[in-house]
Amino acid sequence: MSASARAFRSVRCEALDPLQVFAAAGTAPRFYWEQPAAERFCVGIGCAARISVHGVGRFEQAEAAAREVFGSMTWQGAGPRLGHLVGGFAFAPGIGSGNVWQGFPDGELRLPELVYWRDGERYVRDACIGSRWADLQPRPLALGQPVRGPAEIGNGGPDPYVERVQRALAGIRAGELDKVVIARAVHVTSRSPIDAVAWLVALRERFPSCTLFAVGEGNAVFLGASPERLVRVRGETVETVALAGTAPRGASTAADRALGEALCDSRKNGHEHAIVVQHLQSVLGACCDDLEVAAEPKLLKTRTVQHLCTELRARRRAAAPVSLLELAARLHPTPAVGGAPREAALRWLAAHESVERGWFAGPVGFLQSNGDGEFDVALRSALVRGRSATAWAGAGIVARSEPRAEFTETELKLRTVLGPLLWGAP
Image 1: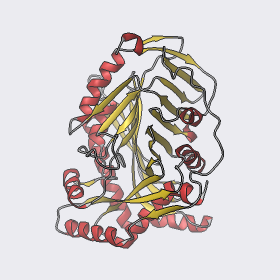
Image 2 (image 1 turned 90 degrees about the horizontal axis):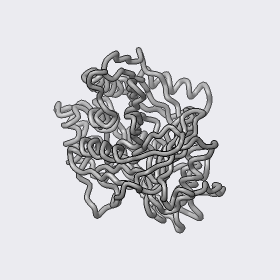
Image 3 (image 1 turned 30 degrees about the vertical axis):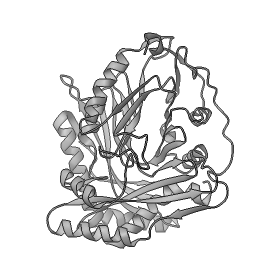
Image 4 (image 1 turned 135 degrees about the vertical axis):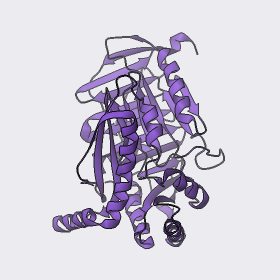
């Protein structure tokens, strides 16, 4: 790649809707990440450089390649001049090529040819000079449903999932595990192509406090609305959250409050949550200073469910600051999406889960050339290809878990992402 292909122009710009940029990209390599309530977004179009990584050393590979890519960039313009690498990583390495996740390797970060990003009141446009995408104009969002006509859904029923939970409980009773998170997949087929942009519009209207994301190329788009941050780095500050323990929302204010109080008082959910907090404390305590952990969980409420949530914050050490990708490698997978002990849980999942997770529950987000950035856990998510989509959800299994209640929990979580597709928006 020539040096001129890495020359970028950075300027401040007017306010805009990142989904309009994503929509205008058609089938090009495209990325969308937005936190509407926090007034932050990053949308990237095209691909000036692609970092594809594989195997157990994938985060280290991405780190080395990212330094090379950022080092090759030159800048013009009066903007902040911050390069962005965008993308994500699979839940675990070793994905085959002949399955639903074809085109999504163990990890991939792209250097977009056009990036719009927002942080509060600051809007920035960074464009690769000479790129065909440099003059891309945002496209007004058409009103409509993600699917036209009926859509068929196949979830396999509760029995296979219940059987896997029972098998996990046997392993927990035998002392092999403390916790394991078991996922299931649901497949949707429509008579017409599924409109990923309309789906994202609906998710944004429903879940403005979540992180909306989409990674697309060709007719494949992995999208979702995640409530869970894996790690955010801003200067010397590191932030993460423990999110584990789930209850439905109530039909009335009183019912909702009662369900939330029962969640907070539940020994089963409290134990599940504490396992995640302990993992995050251990990881951050080993590589950061001034670790702060909220004294007790708060309730994080979305439109469909409520979770126990504990916020953690730490400071990177000045002498040897840990990088964003190294933090992601240390933290992922947390017990909120994998289990504990980590290696035992991952072995159990590889042997028994029978679900192609791919990028579901993996880190998705962006890295900036100054070291800042954020990766979130790709939950409440689905992969769209033409007229079909697959969505995933999981539940944390501990000693007090009741198998059919865990299946019901996955149904509630699937309703988050599939609601706009099957029942209209929002």
